[in-house]
Image (cartoon, rainbow, N blue to C red):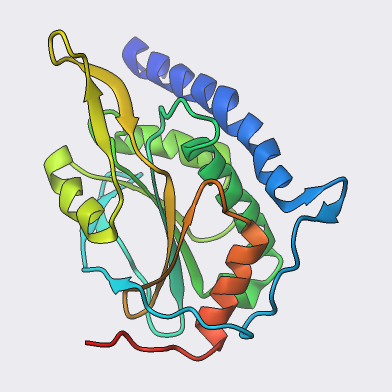
Length: 233
């Protein structure tokens, strides 16, 4: 049975948006790592440095891509999460699409290390619940084709997502027209990714301008297998 016209149109729009923004961003994600096949910088060995606790975040529930309510972070001892905040219609290829492309590369790299992959959960949260419904995030997930534990979450409303954004320190401001106050469909933000350990402590924060999948993996190994400094009261 064919889907209703409105649903089919939404799916086509999501696929078009993905092709226009995320695939070009994959090239940008690769450009972060090397120029003419040579590394831009020397990566430190995992565990050769410390990642002090930056802050701690609380426990929350959101909507999964299947529509059910699930924990924002579903991790236990000896594991960690890579949390990103995006919105699907972000028009800046160097913003949310680049974050998704970089995480996709990391997901592929994790797939080659089953032991490490079993300890890492990737969580992508939309801060545009009005438009990013569970169905739309399911389409995004299907296009990214995760190979590991990569979850796509949204909220029931702006009111529900706001405390979570505030807790993580993720900015997201809906722009409105000066004339009539109507939404412009654009959310001003700085795309961020957070590395969170099993104590819900933030251990590092990345932006789209510095999100090297290899460096992120080394941070993950440092958090999981290195010393874990505590947050001073």
